Image (cartoon, rainbow, N blue to C red; front, side, top):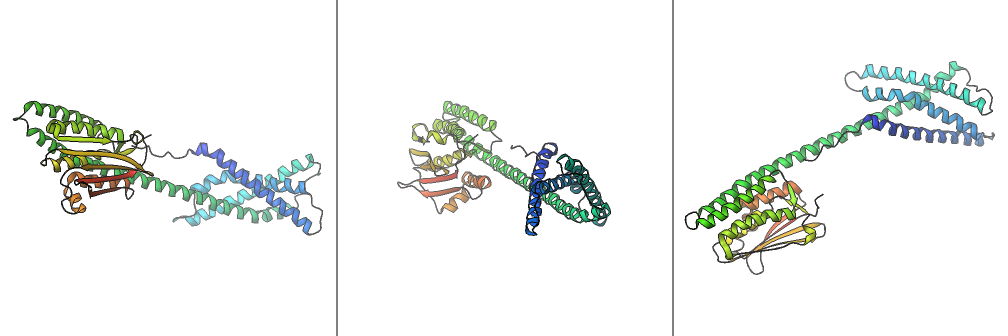
Amino acid sequence: MAEKPSAPNPTEAFPARTGLLFLAVTVAGLLSAGIVVTADLAEGHRADVAKAVVTELTGAWTILLALLPAIPFMRRRPVEGARWPARLLLHAGLSLAVGAAHTLLMWGVRSAVFPLLGWGPYDYGDMRFRFPMEYLKQAAVYVLVYGLVRFVAWLRRSRESELRASELSRQLTEARLAALKRQLAPHFLFNALNTVSAFVREDPARAEAMIGHLSAFLRETLRHADAVEVPLGRELEFLSSWLAIMKARFEDRLDVAVDVPPEALGVLVPHLVLQPLVENAVRHGAGLGPMRVRVRAERCGERLRLVVSDSGPGLDGSPADALARGTGLSNTVQRLRALHADDQRLDLSAGPDGGLVVTVEVPWREAA
């Protein structure tokens, strides 16, 4: 079973997010400095680029310092739900505190930096008017940051909801596939036991050999009972174990050839996808003398094509009727749909020299 995606660690994410915020406010500060400089030039005044940059960057960096402690509150106390009026008042009060802290930080930093740069004492004007003047801008910044925090929270919830829905869909698909495999197991076992029982009295030695092959096949099947997909090479091993039972029964009357290129052996296929198709071919051709079954695999673009052809009687009715009648075939169709939705196909057609041709296509996905 695939591991659930782990949620990001807030402690690990904090430095990265703070770095992004620092970069954002730095860019905003430089843009603001550019506006100040070009405004001075437009009005015919001498532009002091250095002072404009220092003034605007200290304003940008200190607003970040003032806002950082408020961001967790924005995240935990959204203005929504039945208590939105009270939370709106809380945010209004917090924005006033952030604004006052920002104004004091700007005044303190600039008062320390300006003399060091040879610009003399920093004059911030009458603080009675400076606080409300700055707050008009600070309130807008607070609302903008609150909106960004809530937007990020919405994105996170949406992503978590998608992950939960995807996980639920995966679990439902696995449950359905497991149910279909459980349906296939007794069908196969019933057919195999019927085959063995026919030889218990007539040919005990052959029956004993078939029981040995059946035991080996069942052991391998149970070992991979939870597997939804297996590499094609492993699927061919399952098929070989089952064919040992059939060859013990039919001896030289059954001729099976497998043609699979080496590069296809690691491609994932539905577990027990070949056995029902070959069993269907053998069962329908059992009374017609010697039987030939061919299993072939090839790459077609980004898809794996599996072809099972036989020398049996061919189609009896339409392909849809044949798929509906056969437990093994219908079960395989359902498992393919559950696993790959519309990105798969299973077709029945008449062979050029008679018999039936079953073609299965699935995405070319190699096992890790």
